[in-house]
Amino acid sequence: MSDYDYVVVGAGTAGCVLASRLSEDPAARVLLLEAGAAEPLPEVAIPPAWPALLTSSMSWGEVTVPQPGTGGPVPLPRGRGLGGSSAINAMTFARGHRTSYDAWVEAGAKGWGFDDLLPYFQRSETAPGRDPQVRGTTGPLTVAPATPVNPVIAACLEAAAEIGHPRASDVSGGLDEGFGAADQNVVDGRRQSAADAYLTPAVRERPNLTIITGALVHRLLIERGRCVGAEYSVAYAQPAPVRCAGEVVLAAGAIGSAQLLMLSGVGPKQHLRDVGVDVALDLPGVGGNFHDHPTAAVAYSAHRTVPQGNSNHADAFGLIRTDSALDAPDLQLLFVDVAQVAEHGGYQGAPANGFTIRPSVMLPRSRGTVRLAGPEAGTSPNLDPNYFEDDYDIRTMVTGLRLARDIGRAKALDSWRDAELAPGPDLDDDAELTTYLRTTMISYCHPVGTCKLGTDDLAVVDLDLRVHGIEGLRVADGSVMPSLPSANTNATVYAIAERAAHLIRTASH
Ligand SMILES: Cc1cc2nc3c(=O)[nH]c(=O)nc-3n(C[C@H](O)[C@H](O)[C@H](O)COP(=O)(O)OP(=O)(O)OC[C@H]3O[C@@H](n4cnc5c(N)ncnc54)[C@H](O)[C@@H]3O)c2cc1C
Image 1 (spheres, helix red, strand yellow):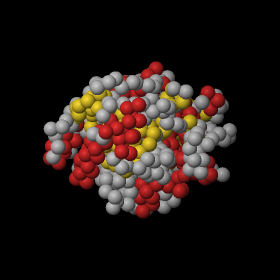
Image 2 (cartoon, rainbow, N blue to C red):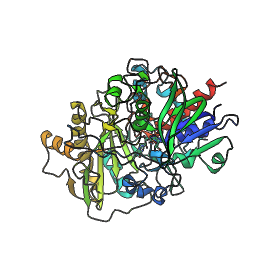
Image 3 (cartoon, rainbow, N blue to C red):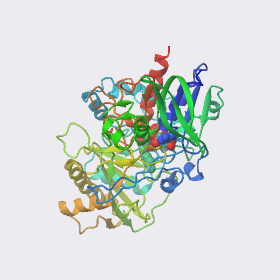
Image 4 (cartoon, rainbow, N blue to C red):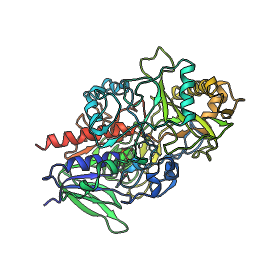
């Protein structure tokens, strides 16, 4: 006798969408399991307070293994609690440029191009004032740019235009290039996490939806090639099984989903043997293809006070091509309303009065791994995004620093700019800027790729997100992206989860 029809593991961005959409069918009994707490910390609701959450109880608090490309470990926060990373993230809401999804199709993920994803992007959002042909009008998320945009960021936008960059009409929509104010997950001055938008009080009261928080999933139950449930523990109790008649959906994120598959014996067999896990299925791609966006700072002090509003500190960005001959935009330049001077290998130092322009290589080529450190669920996995392993990434970031400086030095910023604090005017040649990047980069916190969708030997899920070789098991979160979209990742995870819910509901009828 099974307790549930669907068990969703992880209540982050994707898990909240799945639990909400699957329980729309009153006949479906849905269980949502989340390791973190039910109640958010007070800072979650306050948009500018998000940096305080990175080292709070709502983050897993992990760092990468030492990175040869940076000279040390790099903090890699990820959310823990209802809403997952959407409850601690920086709230920028943007689709990647359409070319970055069409690249998935070229890599074998047929049916996952921008046009295929568009209905699911739209289903997730209400974007007032944007083009309704492209953007959603009735979705649970309400997204919009900050109004007004912080004046120093407005000056950054003018500076970009002054030196010839185009203005984007909708920089969050996936079709435009250039600079503009980005949508944010802020509604009436408060953050709107996935839990706020999708697990509304009415949804939580559904009799067919059970949400258990503080529930660490230890492993999946796999019997004769079929996933029939999961084993989880609350607090310090012994792990208990829960059985599932329909499907288990892994939504534990790019780190958690790969970790759970491997803890359940699904992964590269030699690695599983090395760490003492019995092999259920040799699936060599699990935990591979791990990658992330690196970011770095060009920071300026200001000679007058930069006002601080109630937004996420980063009201606008540009998506551009570092070379006009490229067939896709490859660099984001993010405008920030404080001066962020990085500390080696750590989080940003205390912000000063000023502003920052942050380049990030959008289509990085470096790839690493998530691997188990041991056979127990409570042990943090070894995270190796392998930053800057591919020289292309560092070269693009050096170009990005120079492009950021071109904007920072433009006339439109004369009335704000005081001194360049970082990298500092003395650092100018490629070697100096490369060293600066290696020693000061931080994670943009966009890990993806560890359970990639596709049909090649290293694909983990098929084009309907079903785990290759295991019945009754899908993965639907950031881990399935074959490669990063050219944007912050959250909007894309919402679309993936909306599509997963649709696939699951269609399959059950
Ligand atoms: C600090 C930070 C800033 C970011 N800023 C932005 C931004 O501004 N814009 C943007 O677009 N993106 C941003 N991102 C990225 C974005 O938030 C993520 O890509 C997205 O939320 C990932 O969604 P997910 O569902 O894949 O995973 P998550 O939202 O991370 O959810 C996974 C959930 O699974 C739970 N879980 C994991 N393992 C287990 C287990 N064994 N048992 C039970 N539960 C488990 C976790 O606790 C978590 O709640 C940021 C991320 C971070 C961390």
